[in-house]
Length: 129
Image 1: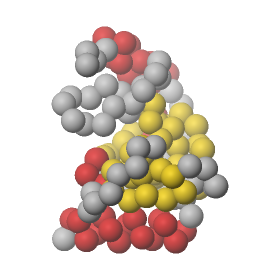
Image 2: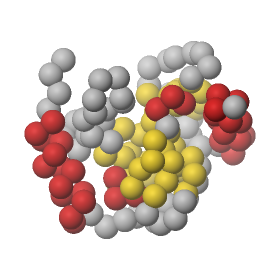
Image 3: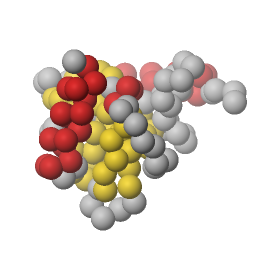
């Protein structure tokens, strides 16, 4: 599959120059412009190159650790599945955790249930230990 790096670079420039950082908290789920990435790094989709992410850790108003989500059901030590507000099941890809500038956050779609948030943090802790 051919990746459209040129369109992503244009969108990334707009985010960098013009985007105002939104107010956000840990445990929220946002659509974020993750872009077009190299190899097996998870990509965003459509014209804004977006993908849902969990705000796993807020470092300050500018940066966060984001955990990308997929609708594709996956199992194993690198994945954590949960339901967001009675919607279909989402799966967090623990191996794709990344530092994200909050300018990439586009719009909030919900809050991860507290119990699931605690579980995903513990699963990530075990993965990194």
